[in-house]
Image 1 (cartoon, rainbow, N blue to C red):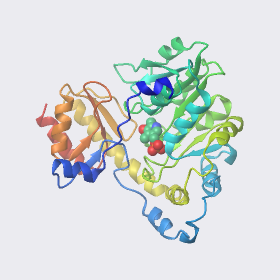
Image 2: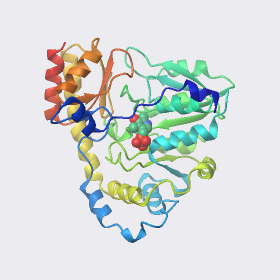
Image 3: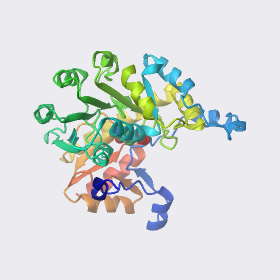
Image 4: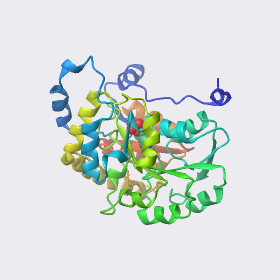
Length: 356
Ligand SMILES: *Cc1c(COP(=O)(O)O)cnc(C)c1O
């Protein structure tokens, strides 16, 4: 066994909703701990799945996901050869770490950020260097990142908007940082929550991608598109890097139903726009509440908010007893709540007020 595996703490996945309900004797449980789309999935997805040709069950799926590939390429305006698909972004993160990292390499990331980046770096024997976010506003400390770059640095992870802080970095800020990173360092830009950014019209780094040969952009269907159960994510990069990724990727990673679901979800942009608009309104309600209640939080452009609460575990337990599961354990005294319906928001905020 690789010696580093023995030091790894297992990722604890979300407990199935039914099992939490049974364990706690709850009639209803609203899961707001995993940033899934609480407004569900486009009904067009189920329609498309039911139309699938079940005569193909014994055949391997299209290993190149050609139809989905062409539709996404067309939608985001890149050539199809720039796309690499994964069983969720989780698989892309695994693949990237496997391809680019060896023992002794260094990886730089923000603290706190999505935990999978560090996990897979550790599995490959790389050293993880954490740069704390700016405590006043939760933003990336890009100056701090630059100071950590050495000749061992192989990979830099930037999550935008960042999970769990929710903070969004402007494209101009990213460019100013990327311009100072040496070309031989790979920058991974995770845009899992980019659909939820509403402050500007142009929010993605995508139009700049061709100018940065060492940047890879990551997207998923698990969040705004409401397809977490189908496991579809993709990365956009120059064709040269894409060829290396394709060589390592498992040949039939996306099953046909996942491909069909993603095609149908992509075609229903009204569903996305509607989910984003409801989220934006509720996000404003949450931020207004935190301001009024003098609870420290980071201004979010994602579908969740991160807030400081000294008795965090006690509050999370109390919310659970009331049928609401939110995320704890990401940073001491901080909690992350996925933005759901206004009705649930009103109840959650009243419980938080009572427990202050
Ligand atoms: C949820 C999440 C992912 C993983 O998404 P999947 O496509 O479901 O594997 C990746 N990055 C970030 C920042 C996330 O929050």
